[in-house]
Length: 265
Image (cartoon, rainbow, N blue to C red; front, side):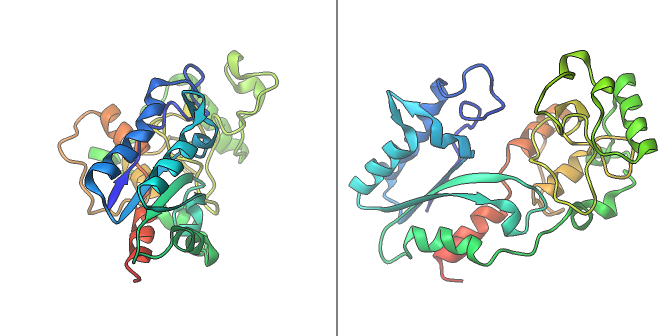
């Protein structure tokens, strides 16, 4: 089995610089080259849903991969999977291209089966309630907020609101905008928004803890990403590096469910 997630920054809607025309977009097709070399019985390529709009040399990269893999004898199907349907406490979606060879189940059967009987929605309370009081040690250390963001979080706590009004946002974030979640507070009874490497700052998204005047810890973000507590992130020491590893990860439930389905378990 060949599993890969080419860099998503060139496809992400959060990228305002090289989106749709990023040299890294071509790396998606390196998965096809790897399939040609290793000839696995199954190929899984995951990415952000926006990959469906990106091109390489004038053609859509997903369509190129689909055609090339079919030429190698694979049956191919791709689909956007809401990970909340797989039991992840997060409203994250991923595009998955699955290519298989007999006698493996058809890729359409596998991917469509993932969401045919979705797992009951798991909210933030299920994921991190037991971590509510951060210990202040290691990856349970609360991130430090600027004085301005501390005031914004205090307002949300005092008012009971989850969205910050425009007049309390930085001037550059005021007026007409679609970034309602920026500087927002999470809700216990709902899944989190997509976790990125900016989870330690409320200025990066709706990352304020539901009940505490702080942003999420690395431990909480890892839980929301679906990592069990026994998972170890190696020798990572810097907070920024740990945030990058957690934020760039894909919840393991996605590959787990696909692989189990391919094995018929």
